[in-house]
Length: 543
Image (cartoon, rainbow, N blue to C red; front, side):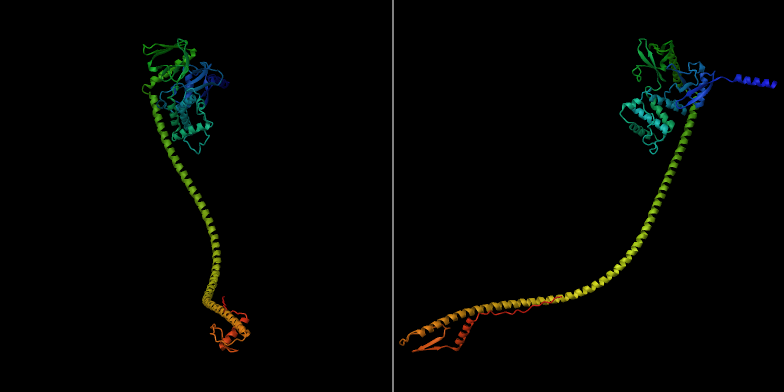
């Protein structure tokens, strides 16, 4: 019984001791976290839990932000979480963001997680056009963002279109030029390729170093009115307070550096800035809401504290963090160098392997080609052997034909010799025949001349005979006359002489003349025959 009572008491005491909790959702720039918070927790308890979870030690830059009726507010460290004007619906959502910005990011941001959170927040503000960035700087910042995300540029990995789904440039910059996404990607990649060798934290720090020089970097703007009711903008940043024209957020009209401000206060909606120099007039303005003045005062106090803190020696905690950061940076640098050496050795090994594989493949191809060449050589050798046999047979045939040709040549030479001799003999015979023909032509001409002479003599003889006959006829028919002794007329020498004595007529013809005359008479009665020439027969024999 006593044991049962004791067990009930212990259970009831445990039930009473168990605190009440509520769920909180913390949204960072790259993650979301949920915590169970006790009802009594203050803002600092939740903030410290988030920082411990993130491993963040540079807590003075950050805060937990929430929204009240379209107005931004920050969780107060000394006030309970549920006492803030936040939604009681669980999970209660807060945004873990940078509340204050450094003057020099490279010197003040020590931890890598701090740099990364600032990089993500500033990048989002530039893309959302809360910070104005010129087009050229936008492309350069985009290239560092790509280096931080993808590492060194590798053409074989980062092919055309690998940035198609990335949001890297403000829409205002994209709409300013008539360029395709491919053209923007080409320009960003050209810068990206030049950042080889930079680690993620280095690329993010380069991004912040460029961004911190932009006019709107780290400035919180609030709509205000001066005493005359003119609408203005109040800017609060790490260097002081600035008054802007609503149409120009880049160049302030008036600036109040923190080291020149003596006091800042507000009364209801009226806000007062008292310069350190009493000769300068106090600047007063009105905001739209009281909580806006409270927010402005919070930002002024925090930025002023950090402004004064930067101009003092670092605290022991900061010195310790910087020392650890330097050691961590040196360790990472050595690790990167070791990884770079290993990467280089691996690349060299891969190149060597690729070269060996290439050479092996080449040797295999050469072996295959050599084998094919050997097979072709064997086939060629067989063909050559067959051709050699055919050639040998052809050589024998050619030798036989050459012998026959030699015999034929000898025969032709002998025949040529005989033909030459016959030709010479024939030429000699032709020459003799020509000589004989010439002689016969001469003889024929002589005979023709003789025949002409004989014809002429025959005509003369006929004429003489005619005259003689006429003479005889005249003498025979003439009457008898007394004898006379006239002187006889001379006769032609070829006419026979007559002796006429008294009544009787006597003819005194010589024998030769009578023969000649009878021959001529016979020739006259018979046709004249031309002498015939008998030509020798010419025969030529040739083979």
